[in-house]
Each structure stands twice: as C-alpha cells, then as structure tokens.
Length: 280
Image (cartoon, rainbow, N blue to C red; front, side):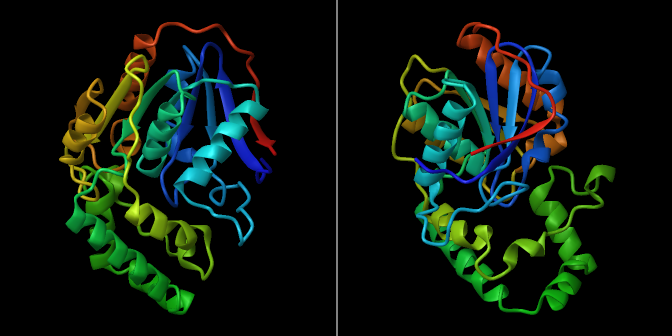
C-alpha cells in the first residue's frame, strides 16, 4: 500500500519494540520511557500519520483505525521490523491490540486503550467529537485565550495527569492547534469516538492491559471489558497515573512493557540505527 511519510526515532539493540502514541500526541510522549527500554531492545518510536513530524494522508483517504493499523504494519515491513513487541497509549493502545489480532505483534502492552467504552460513554464521545468540529470554527486567538484561563488549565491538568497538583502538571494545557478545520485530529476524532475493539488476540501472544487508576478520560473499568474480550490478558493498575501514564510514571510503564516482552521470549538482536529517520 502507498503510505505517507512517517518520521520515527530508533534506539537500542535487541528484539524490536514499537511504541505508538495517542490521538493528537507525538513520539516525544515516550521520551522518558525509551532510555529504559533501549537497554534491552531495538526501540522504534514513530509519529503516527498526521501528527508530530509525519505527513497526513490525502483528504480522500479513509483515515480510520483500520487504515492506521494497515499503515503501521506496512511501515514496519518497510524498515525491516516484521513482528515487533507493540506498546501503545489510548489510540495507540487500540492499534497495538489491532496489530496483535492480525498476528503482527510478538506481544502487546495496551495503556488505557480506546475501544472498551460503554454505550453511554461512546455516545458522549460522539457528542464531544461534534463539539470539537464546532470549536474549530472559533477564531484561533479566541480559542488560545480560552485554554489559558485558570479554569481551563485546571481542567486540562485534571483530565491529562494523575496528580493535577504535581509540579510536572503545572504546564499542561489543551492543545488548540489540533482544532484547525480539516486537521488530522478532527478527521480522526469521529472514528475514535465510535471505535469498539471487536477482535481478539491469539492466546500465544502475551497481552497486558494497563490502566492508570486515576484515568479520568477513559475510566479504568474499561480494563474489565478488555479482559472479557481477551481472556488471557494480564490486567495491571498503574497507581497514581492518569490517561497518559508515560508522563506520570515512565519507569512503571517501561517495567510493564519489559515484563510483557519477556513473556514472549527473547528475540534475535536487531541492528541499531541512530537518530531520527523517515519511511515512506
């Protein structure tokens, strides 16, 4: 398949680990996790198409969860990573599970993955998706001023961090740049809102479903629904973590990924490229 240009970082040596970020995020979300993993693995961290430094797909592209999973699989083939361990957060967690269901992952670590919401929560997410499209019509300076208010900053910290009062959470705000008309974020949001993981992952593929116990965006109860879909999955509570646990406790996240990889057995060492690269 013809895929857009994907920018990625690669570091370390060993069996490959692929890290996938969430909606509206970028590969730097994993920057505090990568050094720990790279002591044991060849770590590949891409910007998903349309985010970070990676090109967005054409306007007439399907650009949904299935397309993203196909594109990431093709990207792995292109860089010579055939069946990596895959870890992802939120949207990235769902993609990790999709790759696992397709037999394209040696193991899966899903951190607060989308796809396991109740019907009322899915309806609410769809309402928020429509609201985001309406918000995109508001002039950018007005939006930026709104998210810089104390109330909006407090809301962002509460939704995006496990401990809203921590020093690390002080600079957290909502990123309104993703709300430009026709942006990748707005194109994907309706698909993310209505997405339900309907497959399963073969019992021979180790799966860990890890959820921050302070996740206020996707409640931890989703983990129980994930286990009903994937009975052999290991459930982990990430204490003190919110929806983006890599920001709250990168060492705990790295430890869970490493443990899941170990359950799949050691792989053969891979080459060790350095720096950032791009794949087409």
